[in-house]
Length: 88
Image (cartoon, one colour):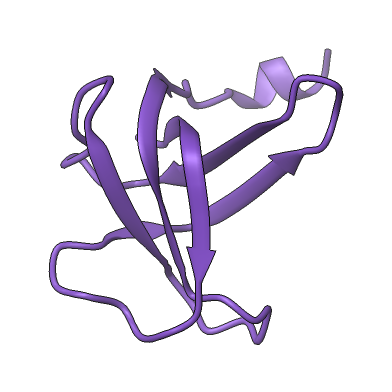
């Protein structure tokens, strides 16, 4: 199941994945008045709220960074949508 992890004190850094990094399948930045950064991962090892966490992009993407670190603000389990839900 996909977990969306909202982060505070976020840093993106270049460099290879480190031991203990969780895979980041998706990386989002909502650059609004109240900015948000979140990661979506399939990992079941996401720590609890308030804990430090490190992610590495699941695939090389030539974005200028490969790792994302921060503090977990909240995490949300995303439910799978059925075909019926997509038609609505």
